[in-house]
Amino acid sequence: MRCLRLKKQKEITGLHRSGKRVYAPSLTVIYVPSDRLKMAVCVGKKHGKSVQRNRIKRLLRAAFSRYVPYLSPCCVLLIPHVSETYTFAAFHRDIGKILGREKLIDHSA
Image (tube, rainbow, N blue to C red; front, side, top):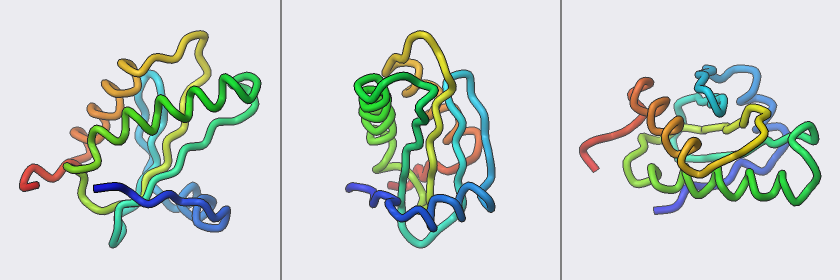
C-alpha cells in the first residue's frame, strides 16, 4: 500500500494552517484526518544545499513508508528540525512515537 503525495501548494498550505501539530526531537508532524492517506515533506533552504535537502527528504519518506500499512487515513506533513546530522533511525523512531501517541496507527490492519 502506498500513500499519495500532496503536491499542490494549496493543499499543503491548507494542511499547514488547519492541521494539528505534534513535535518530536527531530521533526514536526502536522496532520488532519482525511478519506485517503496523503503525505508531504517540507524541507527549507536552511537545511543546506539541494543535495542535503534531497537526502533529508529521502530519509523521511523511507522512515514514513515503514508505517504506511498501519496508518489510518489522514493527510500528513513532515517538517524536519535543523540539525547537524540527519539519520534514518532518528526519523523512524520519532515518527513512530508521534503516530503512536496521536493514535494514528490502526492495529486492525
